[in-house]
Image 1 (cartoon, rainbow, N blue to C red):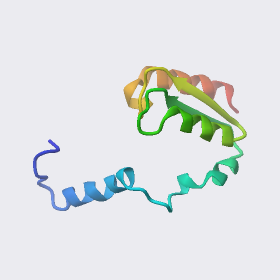
Image 2: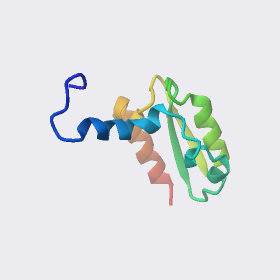
Image 3: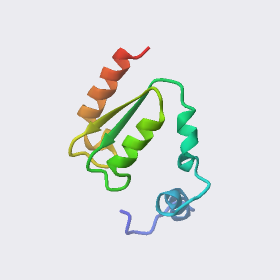
Length: 102
C-alpha cells in the first residue's frame, strides 16, 4: 500500500508532514527539554520495551529518573510500540499500575 501513489488529494504530502518529526531532528521539541520532565508532579508510569531500537532503554531509564513520581516498567523482548507489539502485557501492566494509583 505504501508503495502505490495515494489517491486522496494531499495524502502523500500529509503523510510526509506527519512523518517529518520522526525522521528529522527538531531542536525545538519539548521532549528534548530535560528540565520539563522534572516538573511532572503526578504519578507516572513509564512503559518501555527493552528491544526498542528507536529510543533505547537507557532513555526510558533516564526519563523515569527525572520524574519524581515515576515507575519504570520494562517489557522484555518488546520494541518501540509496546501497546501494539505486546498489547496483553502492556494492558496488564497499565491496569496493575492504575489499580494502585490514586
